[in-house]
Amino acid sequence: MDYEDLESKFHPKNRRLRGPGRLKTIIFCNPHNPVGRVWNPEEIEKMGNIVIENGGVVISDEIHCEILFKGNKHTPFASISDKFEQNSIICMSPSKTFNLAGLEVSNIIIPNQRLREDFINTKGGMVPNPNLFGYTALEAAYNWGDEWLEQVLDYLQGNLDHIRKFLETNIPEIKMIEPQGTYLLWLDCRELGMEPHTLQSFMIDDAKVGMEDGYIFGESGQGFMRMNIATQRSVINSALNRIKKAYLLKEKI
Ligand SMILES: Cc1ncc(COP(=O)(O)O)c(C=O)c1O
Image 1 (tube, rainbow, N blue to C red):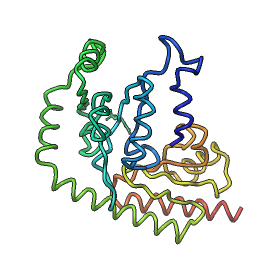
Image 2 (cartoon, protein in one colour; image 1 turned 120 degrees about the vertical axis):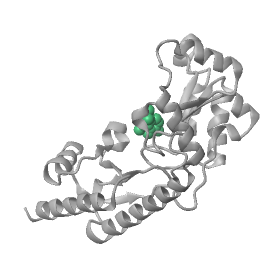
Image 3 (cartoon, rainbow, N blue to C red; image 1 turned 90 degrees about the horizontal axis):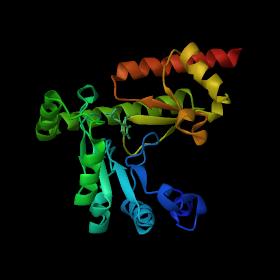
């Protein structure tokens, strides 16, 4: 995290950010999509203090907080202190963890009454209320989903271990950035030596594997690809083998 940059953006001395148009909030993603980082309490505290001490509020997107790999623990933003709790808008949802995106349901937790009322008044007719299926699914997932989730996490860990081993053995030019959480894998493909658009066309046209291009996440994402590993191992295996085959063919040309 670039604390200096954050501080400079929030600081009232920064002329561009004065007055009604000044920065009032940031969206903090924990665990982070796409790089899979699970932020630790010290990092969260440092970032939160910069925002809150400059009069801002943190929108903490914790939608991936249940998808954690071995040895990692999620720290809710609001758990740091009362001050953090009162200056936060926590966004969560069963849609990722329990694969319920189609039901369009999320839970937004706003402990501070004034902020909560502002949110409710502002959302007005813009954000629809969840439908009955969504409510019911959310309740079922949170109340009875533990055992299912345990199995999912186990399977995801297996997928991760499989991909790491496959890449190390077969295409060491693609480096897997070890994720701490989320089912989205950040693959460093820079050693393949392809420009971002060539890399995209190599994956889609040659290997027939559709992944998210790193550059859509910003300049520093160039040369990376985001792979969704929340699927059957056979699908992943087939994708990896197609990438390997396409790469070997390219090497020969
Ligand atoms: C970090 C994060 N927040 C929010 C969302 C939006 O989730 P949904 O499409 O279920 O509304 C996503 C979806 O990819 C996400 O990764």
